[in-house]
Image 1 (spheres, one colour):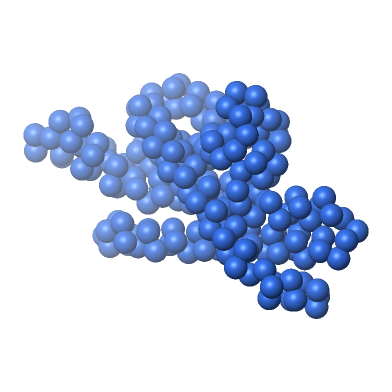
Image 2: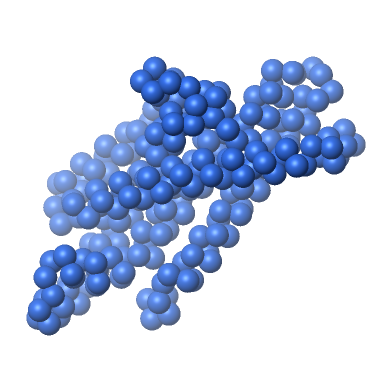
Length: 216
């Protein structure tokens, strides 16, 4: 325990730097996954067969072991952050696609019909009525996707991406040495801390972007 405390006292600036790298890696993937996932959901939610197909295909991605997917990305794209972001984006799609479809399908048809009666076209109803009403469910999907890939992002260090996984793998490579356990524990605790910070971030975003009427 004392070794860990001494290690953190010496290396906390490095830990913060790696945590920021880790967070940026995750958020970048989530942004891409949100754009793609919401787009897919909007395209297929009116068709049950297409909705089921979209959910099934994105669910299949999660059955691929992370190391295998990262290895494929290295073959196709090369080492580094780009491969990691593509793989993490793929892993984050399922909750976002599923929740987008669910959120849009749960919008009260009477509300949409009222908007149609007021002269709103399909695009206007989608942007001004359906998506805002579905937003809390969509945001929950984004939140779940983020928590899902926070830990997977640590494995991305194996292919040369930044983040807290570098300390975890470094510690594993030094097993038996004095620095091994502090590196592994510090990296793991950093991943947990990043998850808590991002989860709190989504709570704030939800309150700021969801109207009081929808929340209640």
